[in-house]
Image (cartoon, rainbow, N blue to C red; front, side):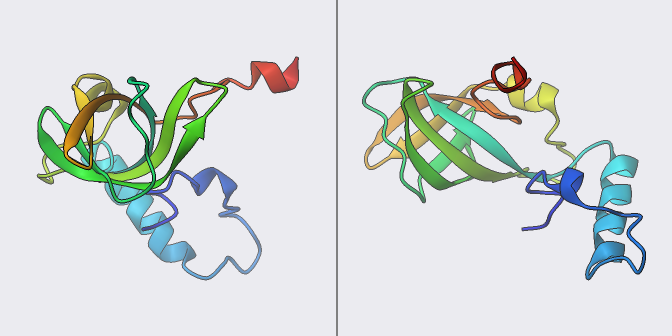
Length: 136
């Protein structure tokens, strides 16, 4: 996984004197994604819609019945009232771009054990995505 795929490019100082290890590769990936119109692999937030859904790690995430990735970390989110997780998803075809429109436009599910549960998938955080609670 890369800094770009994990959504952490905002934390990089690309103008830092002397650069940083891997800077050129990160900039190449950023340019490739811009040229293509979006990424083909990225980290997303997942929220279980069922009280019976519990996420741990390794659960398969589906979009419209097609496997897209797996839960990397999961727990219970008391603030949002359900199972929460972070998943790395990858487009099944390089022609598919993992844009907000694509992510919002599908029906997402997660396989936990022998059961399939509906989930909500977002690019940003599930709670207070605009930092209104923090900023007051």
